[in-house]
Image 1 (cartoon, helix red, strand yellow):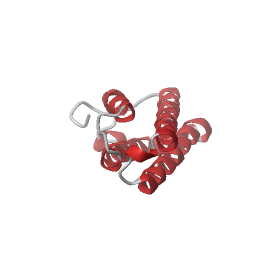
Image 2: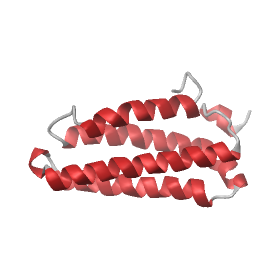
Image 3: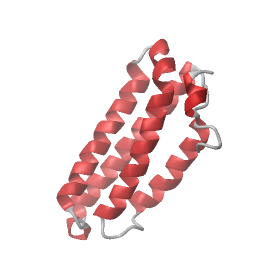
Length: 132
């Protein structure tokens, strides 16, 4: 049993792993940019503005790491670390969305409304069905 199968992650070609990692990085950077724009334009709507800013900085960091993971890593490194990296990214996504809902005063913001289905679609592509 491979590590990916044990973790519940679908095996993919290296080129697909690169594209998915790059896409995840771009999505995280997009969410961080949206959070920064909320921070700048609607700071009065935020319950905890400083914690929200820290969350957006963390989101931007995760996005850069995921993007660089897809751009710079070798094929053998991608194959070895694909499953744990994918699961860590989804765990961070879930925690990040929950924190975003807690830190903002309005849980129906577009930032959160867009993030939920995008992460779910990505999960069904990357993970086996029972994990997604």
